[in-house]
Every structure is written in structure tokens, then in C-alpha cells.
Image (cartoon, rainbow, N blue to C red):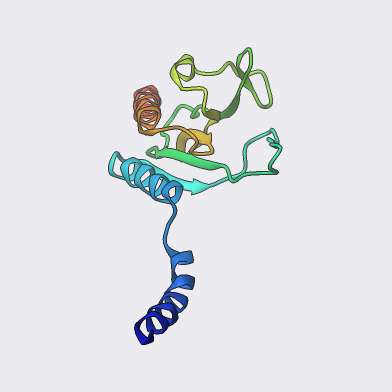
Length: 151
């Protein structure tokens, strides 16, 4: 009987600590972010450009996966943002045509943007590692095309 009581007390003491263990989803997101960082991208929280996205669960955090670009010399860099709608990619403001490479992005991507310092995508990290690999490939190709345009 004493052992049962000791076991019960230990279990009650340890139970609150299980709250701090990462969930399966948190571990998957950490793996995706680490994979992106190893491939040369940076990850940060950003507001979705030009459009508010709401879900039945309320607003969820939007994550930006981007590739840093060297400072532009001479020609003005491509600056703009585009969101993925049901009928393809559209500019958030202005009439700038979206880069053709954006058509290769998976549907989990909400928007894409390029500014003087980076180019990248906005999403909720709702895809899997295969989609992330496709995203990284597109961002790399996009960044390379922007770099070659500036040279």
C-alpha cells in the first residue's frame, strides 16, 4: 500500500511537467524551420501583405520564409507582393505582374513578396516536408533570378 501512495504522489508531482513537453506539431514546425535555416533561408513572423486572412478558428500566425538579397546596385530592385487566390497569383497593390516562378509554389503558400533586402513566401507552415522542399527550391531560383537581374 505504501508503494501505491508513493507512486501516486510521484505521478501527481510529474504530471504538470508534461505540459511543457513539445507537441508533435511543435516538433514538426521546429524541424521545418531548422531545415529552412540549413538551406539558407531565414524565418520570421510577419503580417501578410495587403490582405487579411481569417479562419473559423480566428487569426493564425503568418510565417515568412525568405532569402536575403545583396544590396542592389544600379537598377531598381523588384519590389512587390502578391497573394495566391483561387484564380492564381495577384498583386496586393499596384499593377505589377507576379513573377512566373510563383506558379510553382504549393497551394499552402498564402502570399509572396520581394523587397530591397529579401524575397520569400508567407504561409502558416501547414504543409509537410515535401512542400517545404518545393518552397525552398522556388525561393532559391527566385533569389538567383533577382541577383542576376541586378548584376
